[in-house]
Length: 500
View 1: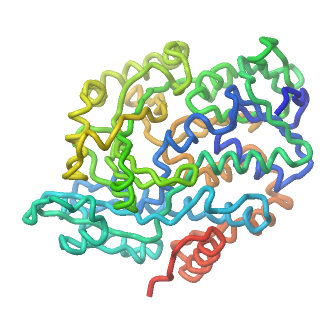
View 2: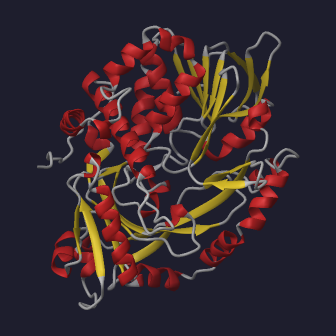
């Protein structure tokens, strides 16, 4: 792509990741007249958080992630978050299916494949927890078809690599669901961006770094972007700006000066994988198996043994092993954390640091693990694992949101946060998982906030065509759930059978 760009577009999208690509696609579907300019500081799309090696690619649907179903103080399971995330992932699948049917996305096999999702635990207390979780989720239509077992023989059928060499007397349990998927969000993003580039009025410019965003007297936004190849600073003026720059979003949001940006901070968490190098072992595991995070560890640290399809090849990853770096991006600067510290957020950030000492201790411990110690952790999932068959790979960098809180002074928030100006002319996405999997729902909410007048016209009708369940909770409509899943499974070439 050349370095020509639109200096006066209707919309500027900063960052060519999955969220920006999804927003740009929606805007052109809803109003083809929009002129959209996308700026990406790297040489291609989806090289940071959206890249396949930088996220779990689980297609987060709460089928296996135990942190989405916490146990309450009275011993019951809270399924609220699991239901919400499953609903949102079903919405994402509908959007991708619509684009496939329109011919705007390539073969679904290029970015999504059926991959069983399983939860696996050991120890009497954890087995009791998983049984309660299973029973709680079976009350909901969205989770019908999930199986539960404590039988070693059955678990060996589901995940032989995990059960081989395990003590036959060990108390273990697992849930299994064929509805699960593996999603290559990097491939999906590039697919969406490629489709956008073919449309009139869309320009994607790589190697352009956004340095500043300021409001002009006439209400437009002035975006200062530097061409990293020539070093020349350019100015672009737009009516609407979306900052979808992953870990770089916070710093740019602060540049806008909008009141809504005050008080937000960021806490960077790095990650590493153990990646299997033995093809014979890779062939023996075909699932995403999630365990329970250790006490005191952050929610996104649920250990998991993941089958991945990356660039058409099967891979097997285990992790994540957390780490700490002051970088906010994998290809960022060690100054990233320090340049986001402002008078408006220094107190919340200090409060979070003081109240989350256990998390800091956990991260320090994770960073200091030797390779042998990492493999020892892997033995909980693969008893016969040997060091010769695995290697360490650096995963993506995540920035967890720190929010100002009137009572606590500062709260560390896991998940995503959309920050939008009062007039809806600028918005930014902060945070991390499960952002990619729920990207469509994130964008639908953003569109309502930023383009409320358009929803009084044709947009509401058009969205119902794009997403059949739009405006309806699938959990309350069994017939619609089965109809939608039948359509998306056929279109996306996923293996799903309606539960009896």
